[in-house]
Length: 217
Length: 280
Image (cartoon, rainbow over all chains, first blue to last red):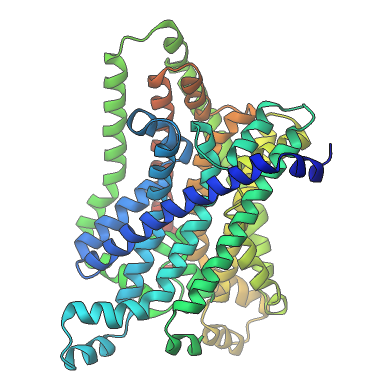
């Protein structure tokens, strides 16, 4: 059986696994974006809180994924729970860091102008700083997504969802007829998902970045 | 775009933000500026934080394991000789892979940064971004089909996984050196080779080191997957514990791997401080 025959004959399994992969990544990145951007908004002006949140999220990223996933088993069990917690935790650092960098990078005179027009601090934050920082924040979310798409493959080892199951199936049946096909299907499928997510973020960027910023790029 | 990627890069770690990259937007300097403010003594104390925390974790781990009533299966994994062997295997795998990455990626990055190779820049940036999504476990298993199981397979997989980020950081680091400085060096009569060696590479050191440091830390984590292709390392403890339903074995493997990752990250930070050109 060659690769294309394998994909056709296993299409149901593969498409389900791919859909689960996308769903897990989407949920994790959604939660991480909310938490990360929220944290960034709250801490960007207080150096201590900012450094603490950056150091904490960097520390999480230092923990190897297989180790974190297995250490989570006693707490969140096998499967979706551990997968989602680990993926969300890993996605935080790029988002928080880019939010903080973006918000603090807004020209001080622009903020001053907003204040001078009578806007409250919160209004300046939401109406001036956030839109100006948005491209950088979006880049952070994109980088996080690419990263956790790859990590999600390992989650299959703790019974998590997604295309990683195909890779581990190939590994456990090393030498049998479809082992290579399964591994290839899993790996290439994940690459395809990564490309699709990248296109999605490209579209989001085109649609949501304020027009004044787009012209400059 | 390049500056965007570098600041946004998760791999960049603090050091790549603004530090040593004169072309980077001022925005990125905000973080480092705050960090430089506390006195030297506070900085030195913070330097001791990581090893102290790691020691505390290791002590807690030891106390916890000693308090457990280990059965014969656990004893077979959790004894000093096994753990030391695994640690040696893990470090060997990590360091060998990183050494190969240095040899391969840094020269290629320098070549890619030359102006006549500018066409390659967007290709490398995109490939490095998407390459991150290629699952390392898939890469490892595919390598197994080509070369069978074992240490070498894991090594090839690890190298393939971290070559692109290091290459990217090297290229971006060299490209972001202020053109005025290069111009000045040329005006002083330096040859292109001299400019590269004495100006561009020196100024790119922080960016290159930041990339290497992150690659090294990632490699520690990915090396746990080496256990799947029979290359040893702490991954073996994690996997065995999971398969035999012996949680203490898994926990020891996981915590020890994380500790190595933290220590290597800390050593990387030290190296960055020592090797950074004094003017920066």
